[in-house]
View 1 (cartoon, rainbow, N blue to C red):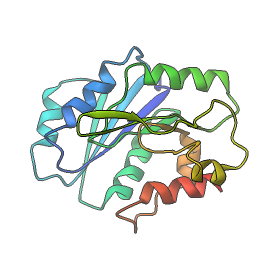
View 2: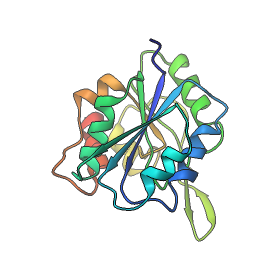
View 3: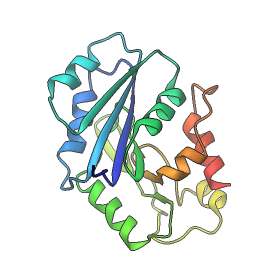
Length: 188
């Protein structure tokens, strides 16, 4: 059985208004070596039914009792089969060509286990690039780069080897900023 290179992991809780658009931002990529792992964390809306109606065999849906976003992220990592993990929040969207860029980074830098890309922030129908200080290359001082906005690992813009994600799981006691806690542990 072939395993995909990238697992896009989406923790889901009551996002029926946007989850299809989020998934379509993945399925419309110019790249095909991926799986989508959706972890429904006890939604009470029609999110799961909407995903099922897409009838796409690249999508794996796991339904679990509500345990918070860290629990859903860890569950996704446990069930993902890819060599790399990319988290995407259920209301975020990948830019066209994102997965191809990430694949290129993996092959260009095979000794790296963590990649961070720039990203857009959208508010009031205006899309703004997060960092004007973002530069391609290696980061020697992770926390300085984070503080000066040279990097800002976040859902949709950070790619991790699965071995790294399994070594540093999300702290399930956090229901907010669980991603920052995990990334800081990895950066240390």
